[in-house]
Length: 117
Picture 1 (cartoon, one colour):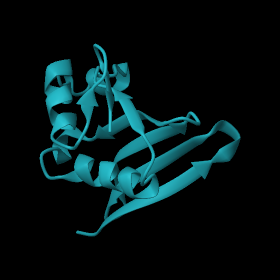
Picture 2 (cartoon, helix red, strand yellow; picture 1 turned 90 degrees about the vertical axis):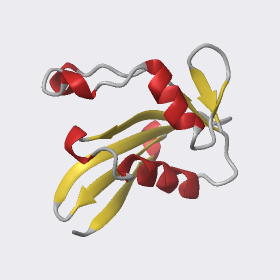
Picture 3 (cartoon, one colour; picture 1 turned 60 degrees about the vertical axis):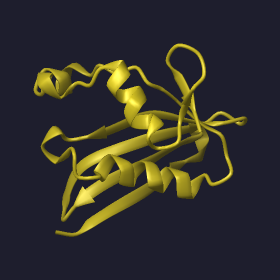
Picture 4 (cartoon, one colour; picture 1 turned 90 degrees about the horizontal axis):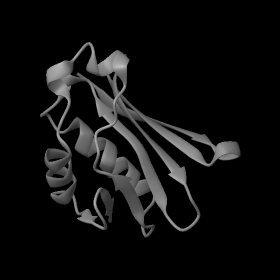
């Protein structure tokens, strides 16, 4: 199986998208917003059937590489998208589990749910 991350840049809205593909199928994505003083990781999602195999980490590493030297920030609160959580209710992670996962990838808490790297 061939893994690829396809990068798209949308400067008119200061946003980037990183699509994770396995063979020809999209199995995850991340979006970032350039806020000037930091890069905000707005979304990071991997299909539940592909979790636990390093794909989310690969997406983060693509963001780290693209924005080396920049402050990265995110919320450790799970985002709720009914079309995804309805189809995969057991796949939703708790805020504590997300914070621990991001912590293992170099992020630290700054406030209640904000994390930076």
